Amino acid sequence: MPAITKPAEYQVTEQRSRFLAQVLPAASLDEIKGVVAARRKKLRKANHHVWACRFYDGEGRLVEQARDDGEVGRPGMALLALLRRDDLEGMLIVSRIYGGVKLGPGGVKRAFRAAGQGAIGSQSSA
Image 1: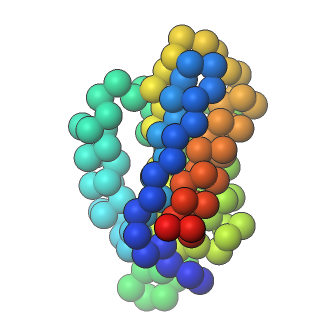
Image 2: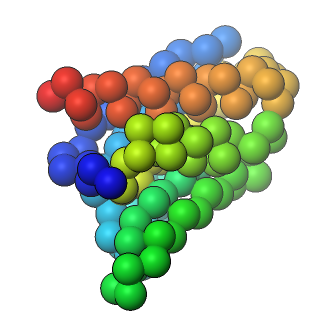
């Protein structure tokens, strides 16, 4: 499985909401929790920090996790599907700064997916 070697960012605006995506290397759940905590401090206006990860633990088992952080439409699973599709090892996090317009579950999932795809594309072309 190819590992994400360097961080990359991407941003999508949908109905005045901003979706800030970042793809980065990650090798443990503690490391991932640290990234999420740092992101919460950095992006204080963001309402949700949705993330997904894939990595091998110390015993060679594949660990896959996704978190929706209270967002509708299961966007964490959409991000995990992107990592699975490209068979990537690392972390994908998308933070949403709410713009005042409700997108509904489908719209939210599509916007998170678009931001995640952009970050993965930026990483591979950078």
